[in-house]
Image 1 (cartoon, helix red, strand yellow):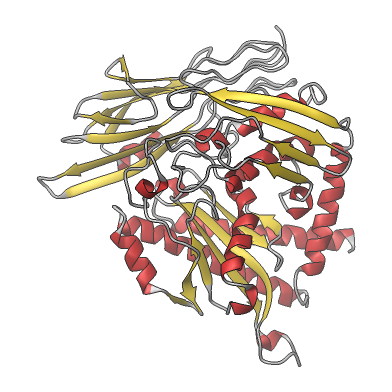
Image 2 (tube, helix red, strand yellow):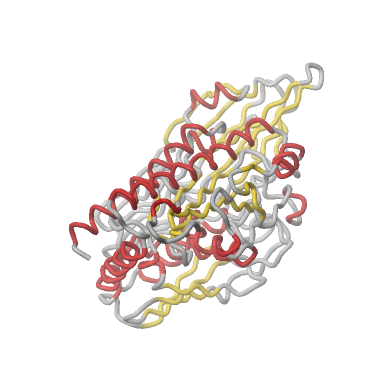
Length: 523
């Protein structure tokens, strides 16, 4: 394909996903999507290969989307799909790894009138996927302390949410009957469906404008260009076996993640054999999420300027032993799986540090800290629920200090104070950088942040704490020092379990100090 044509088509496809993403973000009801950008919109070809992503899409959802579509098509093969169908699931082992994430896929058909002499049947040309973290999915309050997945909410197998353009009312009734915020959840579901319809319309417009029969030629050209660019960088790494590891707080005991990387001229195998076995509580990973956050650090290292697509992802194979913390067997609790998944990048970077010292990054003050607040006023018959996200400091690199309070690797934004105070009965007392919390070295790790707020709710305010690195700090790299650990205080006293649920009474103050990133090199 002519390089100029490829550039035009490629940017049009990205613009389509960006418009779909903007639709989802601007029409959603929850702060999780609207403020924190915990969503993704992508386009895939008819073989379930990733072609284009929206700019704000998070790595975890980009990486799981092709695997999710493959799983959906096993239940509803492509030949059984019709225009207007929307497939839906939140199954952790098919979707993104935990129940709150709704994964939707819509087949995109070229209308019959666009195919002169081709008959009356519409022709499948692509798939659009929209993924979003719902503000509630039923079960117990979103937290890390569940013992099995059944406690964590309602699970939908792969079903048709819409069939030939008609929404399945039973699905929506089941969903609304099992969540605490039915209007908000339905609003986000409909925002996802709107994003899929935008992607469908804009892709058909593109094909008709340029008189293209489908996206196959564009997709193959994108894959070829991306693969060649990634291989040029990959082949600068000496072939061999490299090992890295990372430890985190775990629940009762520390968790160890070990990554063995086998690098050849044609690809990389990432093997997590030797990692901790799955645990009783909800910090376990599923394979799809492990896969997504295993290939993401390579994206940062090899081709950061090229949008994700199958031309890049096909170079990687991930081995995660079943029954391990990175590939738990169902029905393991997986609600807080990101507390493990966001740390995989540190093991990969450590493994490659000896051969890519100019590109690797020290461990960050990850994972993203998630705080869910829920209150019920039985006297007035009112309730509320909201989710806030906060980021620690990023790890340092050879040519820069780590940025403070930055969303790596999740790309999820901090929730603004003004928004949080509007939507929840809390009053922020501080939100500042945690001075000198980054690890020292030739380059310093990024500072975390300190956030404190007071409950204004007349009664018990239940707060779920999805936190990590309160005991085990983010490691430095190539001689850099570790960052400072975080802490959670209630009225100035350490909480008993910083991964559990805390009950606040009106006037109580909760303080969150997020961890700093690791330093790079010796001072």
